[in-house]
Amino acid sequence: MFINRLFTCETMPPMHETMVRLYEAARTLKGLTTQSEVARAFNFSQQRIKNWEARGMSKGGMLKAQEVFGCSATWLETGKPPMETVKRKSDADQIEISLNEHPEAPSYNSGSAPARTLTGVKVRPIVTYESLEELPQESTVLITRIDVELSAGNGRETWHIEEKEPLPFQADYIRSLDAKPKNLVAVKVNGDSMETRLFDKDTVVVDTADTRVPANGGVFALVYAGELLVKRLFRLPDGGMKIVSDNATRYAPVDVGPEHVENVSIIGRVKYRSGTGDF
Image (spheres, rainbow, N blue to C red):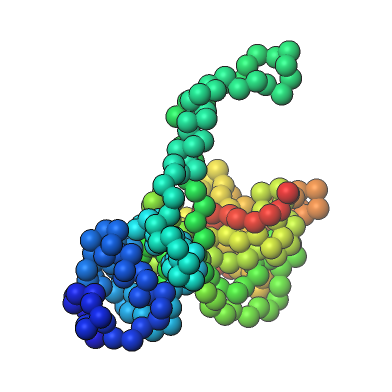
C-alpha cells in the first residue's frame, strides 16, 4: 500500500498515469514525498488520493492540483509538457489591479457624476467540482435534500418523499443562518402563491428546529388540511394563526382559530432560497 513511503520506482505500485505525474509534480515543485503530504496539500482525505491512484484523477482534481502545486492540468491529463504552469497573476489580482489603476470609471451617462471608486475590490474565482467527494471537507456542509414539492399554490393531497443527493454549502454561510446543519433540509417549491418572494421550482432550505411563529410573521413550511405548503404565518393575539400567500391578488389569507391551531403542523422556518424565478 502506498502510504507514507517515498515516491520512487521501487516503492510505487502500478497506478494510473495521471497520478504518476501528480506525484512527480508534488516532489519536483513542492518537495512532497508522501501520500499523506499530498492529501494535506489538497486538503483531501488519503482515501481520495488512493482512489485516484486506481482510477485516475478527476477533471476537478487536476484543476485543483494546478492551483495547489503549480503544475499544468493539461500535463497531468496528457503528459504534454511543460509540467509547470506559466506564472501569472490570478484573475482576482488582475481585476484588483485594474480597478486601482482606474479608480473612477466613466459613467454610462457621460453627463452624470463619475462612478464611485472601487479600489480594493476582491473577486473570488468560480471553482467547479465533478463530485461531492472533491469538495473541501473542512469548509463544506452537506444539507439533506428530499424530493418533495412543497405546495406554494393550492397544495397537494398526497406526496412522495425521497432523499436525494445532498446540497453543498459553505460552512461559514450556514453559520450565518444561525442553524445547525443536522436540522436543515432542502426542498422544492411548487406553485405561484408566494411570488414575488418564492417562485415555482425554487429550492428552499428549512430549519426544522425553528418552528415558533412570531407575531410579525415569517415564511414557514407546514402541513395544513392534508396539504404540504410554504406560506407566511402570523401568530394572532387570540392564539390563532393567519396563513398568508404573498401573491395576495390570487390567494386569500386563511385564519385559523385557536381551537384549530393544533391542526397546523409546522415543519420549520425557511432560511434560504435559490432559483431562477423572476429572471
